[in-house]
Amino acid sequence: MTATFTMLGSGGWIPTARRQTTCAMLSFPDALFIFDAGTGISRLLEERFRGELEGERPVHLFLSHYHLDHIIGLFYLPAMFSGRTVHLHPPARDITGVDALETVAAVISKPYNPHDLEDMPVDIRVEALAAGGHQLAGRRVSVRRQIHADPSAGFRIDDLLVFATDTAMDPGTVPFAEGVSLLVHEAWIDGAEEDDPETEHIAREAYVAHTSARQAAQLAAEAAVGRLVLSHLSPVRGDAYHAQMLESARRLFPQALIMEDGESLELQGAGL
Ligand SMILES: [Zn+2]
Ligand SMILES: [Zn+2]
Image (cartoon, rainbow, N blue to C red; front, top):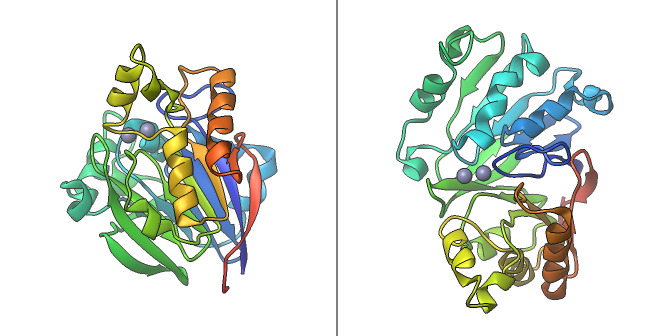
């Protein structure tokens, strides 16, 4: 079984023309999995992705957490999935401490949106996922709690993909991601900041909620994943800084990548 992974939004916090905020897609012949609903989900409206919206494949949308740069795209769903059902999978209360249905309904409501959740032109079914293992559209979906400003969830899909964003460096990611084909992991800073007393505070502040490129590469190496994609890139850093992050990561884990929005990778899961 193969699947196509597409990066739709490789940035964090603030969208830029080059990098929309977090969204990625895992397309199977019989199901469409989407990870986070940042502004990047709007790229599904681009001509090249129109085929992904056709047909009757079930749509599963996983949310890592509720920060707005990861959920603003919920308001865009009628543009893509009008008249269809979207299975929405936020992390459950055991991870976030808040009720998933209440939290989603509080955001998709008047006067923030022309429709309340139950009146949306898309049938959004809130099916929260607790930490642990689940079976969705014939795939094994594992969920774990991560360390962030507000707790977030990491997701593993079979042996294909681990999606881990908005998380501080977390050793628990290693066994969770062990042997997976692709680890998509956030990288907010390079990590070189640690070594200089002038910049050490930047690293210290970032590490409360986020990971460096070096840390992500270290996790990828320890978990022996196939490839690592650095994501949730900072919009206040320039392209040169991001290129330096990639270089730093590749010194520790040569199969590290940064993807442009709209780029795809074919994934082949071990044992599938
Ligand atoms: Zn974020
Ligand atoms: Zn966040």
